[in-house]
Image (cartoon, rainbow, N blue to C red; front, side):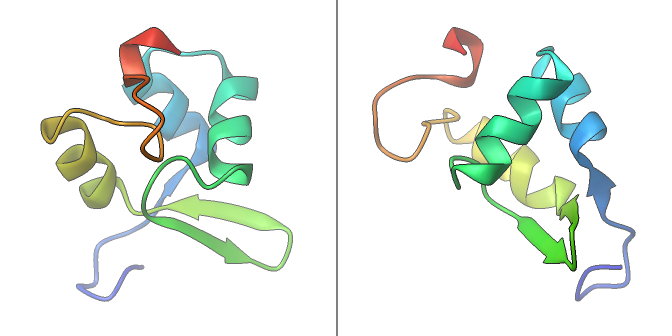
Length: 71
């Protein structure tokens, strides 16, 4: 759960929200291009509230000018 007690999402949840393939979700998380990535050992979890805020703000991929839809 995140700091507010809400469960964290999976990379699959991220990929589904971005309408992208699962491997792209892993790539974005690994490269730090999406907010809210939490590593628990080898597992990757995603703060989906942070992702929603990021998308609402335009979904800029780490300042590279590429939008989430352009992935």
